[in-house]
Length: 231
Image (cartoon, rainbow, N blue to C red; front, side):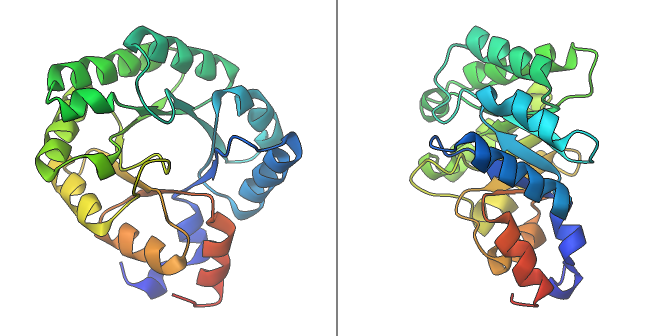
């Protein structure tokens, strides 16, 4: 999509407003939730302990609450990830961003990657709520072959999105990775780009490459730049 077609409204609709810094105070969380409501972002993406406060703050708006799980390393046992996801859903989360077992990805233990993702998907989909599950690969640590294999395992597991990064690894989203992931998962599975996205220019590049969800803590800056045609 051409930059001119990324209106602030269209961009906001695919932004996950990221509120994941460990030093966020409640007033910071409230302010950012209010930003999400004002700009009509898709979600606020928060740590599990912040789900209830965030849900209450965005109540009555179109903004959904997304909770991260096993963040940022992905090395919790699968049953812990399942429990964490279910608690977050019980607290009001509509979406779950779960970090895959990065060590399993690097060890080419894709059956472990599959079981990890499927357990969370099955638990989330087994609730009486329409829950979206995204699997975070942390692409900065993976070869292209490992990215493809991990994506394939996630598709088999039934995830709704594959996601590039936590934002806490050694690198974030790249156009190359978005294109590769989009090609691998096909049109039925979403691709979320996250990590290091701080400008409208980067937003447009990644969205045009195939990312249909963007995670960023610079959401307001991006919308303001798009409003001013600074791309």
